[in-house]
Image (tube, rainbow, N blue to C red; front, top):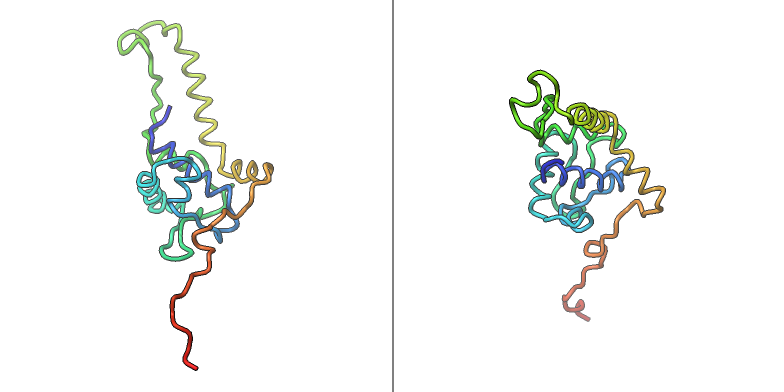
Length: 162
């Protein structure tokens, strides 16, 4: 229904909404890609676009990663959709130009308008808070596991002289 970039962006934003804790928890592009079973380079590219649009904030280095730029309840699906899709108010007719829109509408016209209106309602009236709430209701841990960062670093230094 939407392009790959839109789907990937919504998947990434939904994962960040699931772990929302006022932006303290940050996920890397690798973690988001793994959790959502997406390709890491594409997730990174989409996160860059989301960052430029100020929907996410990112930081590099240890403890870095991405977080939502504001509360999930203040970000609508449409905010993401408009970055990657062209909003088209026309109703696409499967019969093509010249059949529908000239005289009587095609037999599918009113149904297609209804579908388009329903999708528009979801995009404009649904926030990413639904993902935060769903994760909480499922009992998912708020903070993801970070095995690679939580391990104590081994040292190979010689003991101090005696």
